[in-house]
Image (cartoon, rainbow, N blue to C red; front, side):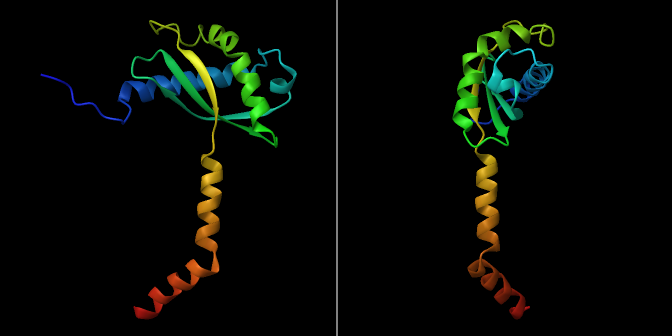
Length: 134
């Protein structure tokens, strides 16, 4: 019997991803990473997606109050091995310590675009015409 493959993450992947997110957040909050750019930037980690084998953790981050997200993402990726080493205390129950990769979280930008579309006069006009028919 073969297991059906799905693109949706398993409960285990979601649970471990949340544990890794919390552990990375603690490392960054304690200021353990000695990098000027990372130390002076507030970084929000919205999600960590785990690979099916739990060996790769992709963290989606948003540097707050910074125009150049790429430089912060590059600094995080440069320090990824150090951060991975600091995760051990919080994730000691894991068989393998996952490799950590950082990516820019663009979901906030997408939400803003959707919000702007919904507030546009064209959409408001269309929404208003539905109310007239009721």
